[in-house]
View 1 (cartoon, rainbow, N blue to C red):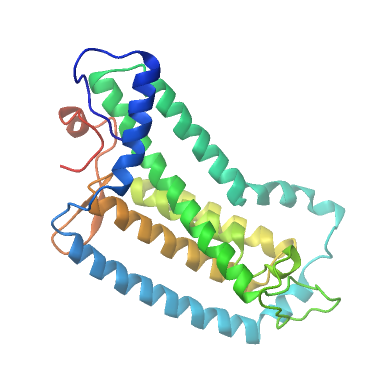
View 2: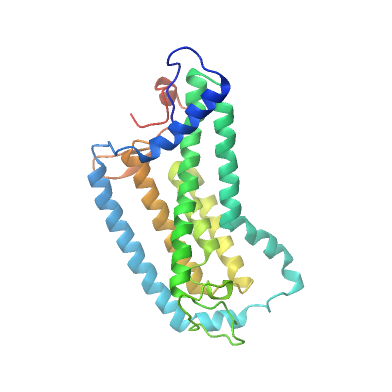
Length: 281
Protein backbone atom coordinates (compact mmCIF):
# COMPACT_ATOMS: atom_id res chain seq x y z
CA UNK A 1 0.00 0.00 0.00
CA UNK A 2 1.11 3.53 -0.63
CA UNK A 3 -0.53 6.87 0.14
CA UNK A 4 0.53 10.50 0.13
CA UNK A 5 1.33 11.93 3.52
CA UNK A 6 0.11 15.21 4.95
CA UNK A 7 -1.03 16.83 1.70
CA UNK A 8 -3.16 19.87 2.53
CA UNK A 9 -5.12 20.21 5.78
CA UNK A 10 -5.81 17.01 7.73
CA UNK A 11 -8.98 15.28 6.53
CA UNK A 12 -11.45 13.34 8.66
CA UNK A 13 -10.98 9.64 9.32
CA UNK A 14 -13.43 8.43 6.61
CA UNK A 15 -11.64 10.54 3.99
CA UNK A 16 -8.26 9.25 5.15
CA UNK A 17 -9.52 5.66 4.98
CA UNK A 18 -10.80 6.23 1.46
CA UNK A 19 -7.49 7.78 0.42
CA UNK A 20 -5.47 4.89 1.85
CA UNK A 21 -7.70 2.32 0.16
CA UNK A 22 -7.70 4.13 -3.19
CA UNK A 23 -3.92 4.47 -3.33
CA UNK A 24 -3.47 0.85 -2.23
CA UNK A 25 -5.43 -0.23 -5.30
CA UNK A 26 -4.12 2.42 -7.68
CA UNK A 27 -0.48 1.50 -7.10
CA UNK A 28 -1.13 -2.01 -8.36
CA UNK A 29 -2.31 -0.91 -11.81
CA UNK A 30 -0.09 2.08 -12.43
CA UNK A 31 2.27 2.02 -15.40
CA UNK A 32 5.46 0.02 -14.77
CA UNK A 33 8.35 2.37 -14.15
CA UNK A 34 11.40 0.31 -13.22
CA UNK A 35 14.21 0.81 -15.72
CA UNK A 36 15.36 -2.82 -15.39
CA UNK A 37 11.98 -4.47 -15.82
CA UNK A 38 12.89 -5.86 -19.27
CA UNK A 39 15.78 -7.84 -17.79
CA UNK A 40 13.50 -9.11 -15.02
CA UNK A 41 10.83 -10.10 -17.56
CA UNK A 42 13.34 -12.18 -19.53
CA UNK A 43 14.48 -13.93 -16.36
CA UNK A 44 10.86 -14.55 -15.36
CA UNK A 45 10.13 -16.09 -18.78
CA UNK A 46 13.14 -18.41 -18.53
CA UNK A 47 12.36 -19.54 -15.01
CA UNK A 48 8.65 -20.01 -15.72
CA UNK A 49 9.36 -22.04 -18.86
CA UNK A 50 11.89 -24.22 -17.06
CA UNK A 51 9.59 -24.82 -14.10
CA UNK A 52 6.59 -25.53 -16.32
CA UNK A 53 8.47 -27.96 -18.57
CA UNK A 54 10.09 -29.78 -15.65
CA UNK A 55 6.83 -29.90 -13.70
CA UNK A 56 4.84 -31.16 -16.69
CA UNK A 57 7.38 -33.92 -17.35
CA UNK A 58 7.31 -34.98 -13.70
CA UNK A 59 3.50 -34.98 -13.66
CA UNK A 60 3.41 -37.30 -16.66
CA UNK A 61 6.00 -39.66 -15.15
CA UNK A 62 4.11 -39.82 -11.85
CA UNK A 63 0.79 -40.34 -13.61
CA UNK A 64 2.14 -43.30 -15.57
CA UNK A 65 4.49 -44.90 -13.07
CA UNK A 66 3.54 -43.98 -9.51
CA UNK A 67 0.04 -42.56 -8.96
CA UNK A 68 -1.73 -45.92 -8.91
CA UNK A 69 0.79 -47.50 -6.52
CA UNK A 70 0.71 -44.56 -4.11
CA UNK A 71 -3.05 -44.23 -3.72
CA UNK A 72 -3.39 -47.98 -3.11
CA UNK A 73 -0.95 -47.69 -0.19
CA UNK A 74 -2.88 -44.94 1.61
CA UNK A 75 -5.36 -45.65 4.44
CA UNK A 76 -9.01 -45.84 3.48
CA UNK A 77 -10.82 -42.54 3.01
CA UNK A 78 -12.69 -41.58 6.18
CA UNK A 79 -10.42 -43.51 8.58
CA UNK A 80 -11.26 -42.09 12.05
CA UNK A 81 -7.62 -41.89 13.19
CA UNK A 82 -6.86 -39.38 10.42
CA UNK A 83 -8.74 -36.54 12.13
CA UNK A 84 -5.52 -34.60 12.96
CA UNK A 85 -4.57 -34.72 9.28
CA UNK A 86 -8.00 -33.36 8.32
CA UNK A 87 -7.44 -30.39 10.63
CA UNK A 88 -3.87 -29.82 9.44
CA UNK A 89 -4.78 -29.88 5.76
CA UNK A 90 -7.13 -26.90 6.17
CA UNK A 91 -4.10 -24.67 6.79
CA UNK A 92 -3.50 -24.94 3.06
CA UNK A 93 -7.07 -24.27 1.90
CA UNK A 94 -6.95 -21.26 -0.41
CA UNK A 95 -10.18 -19.75 0.93
CA UNK A 96 -8.81 -19.73 4.48
CA UNK A 97 -5.39 -18.39 3.45
CA UNK A 98 -7.00 -15.58 1.45
CA UNK A 99 -9.42 -14.81 4.29
CA UNK A 100 -6.57 -14.36 6.78
CA UNK A 101 -4.50 -12.23 4.39
CA UNK A 102 -7.54 -10.18 3.37
CA UNK A 103 -8.47 -9.53 7.01
CA UNK A 104 -4.90 -8.42 7.70
CA UNK A 105 -5.06 -6.00 4.73
CA UNK A 106 -8.32 -4.51 5.98
CA UNK A 107 -6.86 -4.11 9.48
CA UNK A 108 -3.79 -2.33 8.08
CA UNK A 109 -5.98 0.08 6.10
CA UNK A 110 -8.15 0.92 9.12
CA UNK A 111 -5.17 1.53 11.40
CA UNK A 112 -3.09 3.42 8.81
CA UNK A 113 -5.98 5.81 8.13
CA UNK A 114 -5.61 7.12 11.67
CA UNK A 115 -1.84 7.62 11.43
CA UNK A 116 0.34 10.20 9.68
CA UNK A 117 3.90 10.65 8.46
CA UNK A 118 6.50 7.98 9.17
CA UNK A 119 4.21 5.75 11.21
CA UNK A 120 1.71 5.56 8.36
CA UNK A 121 4.47 4.90 5.84
CA UNK A 122 5.91 2.06 7.91
CA UNK A 123 2.52 0.41 8.27
CA UNK A 124 1.74 0.84 4.58
CA UNK A 125 5.05 -0.87 3.82
CA UNK A 126 3.63 -3.91 5.55
CA UNK A 127 0.41 -3.42 3.60
CA UNK A 128 2.27 -3.63 0.29
CA UNK A 129 3.81 -6.91 1.34
CA UNK A 130 0.42 -8.26 2.39
CA UNK A 131 -0.95 -7.27 -1.01
CA UNK A 132 1.84 -9.24 -2.65
CA UNK A 133 1.12 -12.36 -0.59
CA UNK A 134 -2.64 -12.07 -1.14
CA UNK A 135 -2.34 -11.68 -4.90
CA UNK A 136 0.26 -14.45 -5.18
CA UNK A 137 -2.25 -16.89 -3.71
CA UNK A 138 -5.33 -15.40 -5.42
CA UNK A 139 -3.86 -15.33 -8.95
CA UNK A 140 -2.45 -18.84 -8.61
CA UNK A 141 -5.76 -20.16 -7.25
CA UNK A 142 -7.68 -18.59 -10.14
CA UNK A 143 -5.41 -20.24 -12.70
CA UNK A 144 -5.79 -23.55 -10.84
CA UNK A 145 -9.59 -23.35 -10.94
CA UNK A 146 -9.50 -22.83 -14.70
CA UNK A 147 -7.16 -25.79 -15.15
CA UNK A 148 -9.32 -28.01 -12.94
CA UNK A 149 -12.34 -27.31 -15.10
CA UNK A 150 -10.50 -27.81 -18.38
CA UNK A 151 -8.74 -31.03 -17.34
CA UNK A 152 -11.50 -32.67 -15.30
CA UNK A 153 -9.40 -35.33 -13.60
CA UNK A 154 -11.23 -37.63 -11.17
CA UNK A 155 -10.03 -37.82 -7.59
CA UNK A 156 -8.64 -41.15 -6.30
CA UNK A 157 -11.26 -43.93 -6.35
CA UNK A 158 -13.93 -41.77 -7.98
CA UNK A 159 -15.96 -44.29 -9.99
CA UNK A 160 -15.02 -47.07 -7.58
CA UNK A 161 -11.55 -47.84 -8.92
CA UNK A 162 -8.02 -46.58 -8.30
CA UNK A 163 -7.78 -45.22 -11.82
CA UNK A 164 -5.28 -42.38 -12.36
CA UNK A 165 -6.54 -41.91 -15.93
CA UNK A 166 -10.13 -41.05 -15.07
CA UNK A 167 -10.71 -37.79 -16.99
CA UNK A 168 -13.93 -36.00 -17.91
CA UNK A 169 -12.93 -32.53 -19.19
CA UNK A 170 -15.33 -29.64 -18.46
CA UNK A 171 -17.23 -31.83 -15.97
CA UNK A 172 -16.97 -29.17 -13.28
CA UNK A 173 -18.01 -31.07 -10.14
CA UNK A 174 -15.76 -31.51 -7.09
CA UNK A 175 -15.18 -35.18 -7.87
CA UNK A 176 -13.43 -34.19 -11.11
CA UNK A 177 -11.27 -31.29 -9.92
CA UNK A 178 -8.24 -33.28 -8.84
CA UNK A 179 -5.57 -31.76 -11.13
CA UNK A 180 -3.97 -29.53 -9.92
CA UNK A 181 -4.36 -29.70 -6.15
CA UNK A 182 -5.78 -26.39 -4.90
CA UNK A 183 -4.22 -26.85 -1.45
CA UNK A 184 -0.79 -27.40 -3.01
CA UNK A 185 -1.26 -24.31 -5.19
CA UNK A 186 -2.11 -22.10 -2.22
CA UNK A 187 0.59 -23.54 0.05
CA UNK A 188 3.40 -23.20 -2.49
CA UNK A 189 2.27 -19.74 -3.65
CA UNK A 190 2.25 -18.55 -0.04
CA UNK A 191 5.56 -20.25 0.71
CA UNK A 192 7.22 -18.61 -2.29
CA UNK A 193 5.71 -15.19 -1.52
CA UNK A 194 6.80 -15.18 2.12
CA UNK A 195 10.26 -16.50 1.20
CA UNK A 196 10.63 -13.84 -1.49
CA UNK A 197 9.99 -11.13 1.10
CA UNK A 198 11.83 -12.69 4.05
CA UNK A 199 14.41 -15.22 2.75
CA UNK A 200 15.27 -16.41 6.26
CA UNK A 201 11.82 -17.98 6.48
CA UNK A 202 12.34 -20.08 3.36
CA UNK A 203 13.00 -23.40 5.12
CA UNK A 204 10.04 -22.98 7.45
CA UNK A 205 7.61 -21.95 4.69
CA UNK A 206 8.52 -24.70 2.25
CA UNK A 207 8.38 -27.25 5.05
CA UNK A 208 4.84 -26.03 5.69
CA UNK A 209 4.01 -26.36 1.98
CA UNK A 210 5.36 -29.91 1.76
CA UNK A 211 3.41 -30.94 4.86
CA UNK A 212 0.20 -29.61 3.28
CA UNK A 213 1.05 -31.50 0.10
CA UNK A 214 1.49 -34.76 2.04
CA UNK A 215 -1.83 -34.35 3.88
CA UNK A 216 -3.65 -34.29 0.53
CA UNK A 217 -2.10 -37.65 -0.37
CA UNK A 218 -2.80 -39.29 2.98
CA UNK A 219 -6.43 -38.19 2.84
CA UNK A 220 -6.79 -39.58 -0.70
CA UNK A 221 -7.91 -36.18 -1.92
CA UNK A 222 -5.32 -36.17 -4.71
CA UNK A 223 -2.85 -38.22 -6.69
CA UNK A 224 0.90 -37.47 -6.36
CA UNK A 225 0.90 -35.90 -9.82
CA UNK A 226 -1.90 -33.54 -8.72
CA UNK A 227 0.10 -32.08 -5.85
CA UNK A 228 3.24 -31.71 -7.99
CA UNK A 229 1.18 -29.83 -10.57
CA UNK A 230 -0.26 -27.66 -7.81
CA UNK A 231 3.19 -26.83 -6.47
CA UNK A 232 4.28 -25.81 -9.98
CA UNK A 233 1.21 -23.61 -10.60
CA UNK A 234 1.56 -21.90 -7.21
CA UNK A 235 5.25 -21.19 -7.67
CA UNK A 236 4.94 -19.86 -11.23
CA UNK A 237 1.92 -17.75 -10.23
CA UNK A 238 3.81 -16.18 -7.33
CA UNK A 239 6.82 -15.56 -9.60
CA UNK A 240 4.61 -13.63 -12.02
CA UNK A 241 3.05 -11.54 -9.24
CA UNK A 242 6.50 -10.74 -7.85
CA UNK A 243 7.53 -9.41 -11.25
CA UNK A 244 4.36 -7.28 -11.40
CA UNK A 245 5.24 -5.68 -8.08
CA UNK A 246 8.94 -5.21 -8.87
CA UNK A 247 8.17 -3.54 -12.23
CA UNK A 248 6.16 -0.93 -10.28
CA UNK A 249 8.81 -0.51 -7.58
CA UNK A 250 6.58 -2.06 -4.93
CA UNK A 251 8.24 -4.11 -2.22
CA UNK A 252 11.04 -5.31 -4.53
CA UNK A 253 14.06 -3.96 -6.38
CA UNK A 254 15.55 -5.26 -9.64
CA UNK A 255 19.29 -5.70 -9.99
CA UNK A 256 21.20 -5.05 -13.20
CA UNK A 257 21.06 -8.73 -14.21
CA UNK A 258 17.28 -8.84 -13.76
CA UNK A 259 17.32 -10.55 -10.36
CA UNK A 260 14.44 -9.40 -8.16
CA UNK A 261 15.28 -8.83 -4.50
CA UNK A 262 13.14 -7.68 -1.56
CA UNK A 263 13.39 -4.15 -0.29
CA UNK A 264 14.37 -3.67 3.35
CA UNK A 265 11.59 -4.37 5.83
CA UNK A 266 9.39 -1.85 7.56
CA UNK A 267 11.62 -1.63 10.58
CA UNK A 268 14.76 -0.84 8.65
CA UNK A 269 16.40 2.54 8.72
CA UNK A 270 16.29 2.76 4.95
CA UNK A 271 12.49 2.65 4.82
CA UNK A 272 12.32 5.20 7.63
CA UNK A 273 14.37 7.60 5.51
CA UNK A 274 11.96 7.26 2.60
CA UNK A 275 8.80 7.61 4.66
CA UNK A 276 6.61 8.30 1.66
CA UNK A 277 5.57 4.70 1.08
CA UNK A 278 6.74 1.21 0.40
CA UNK A 279 7.92 1.77 -3.17
CA UNK A 280 11.43 1.03 -4.32
CA UNK A 281 14.07 3.77 -4.34
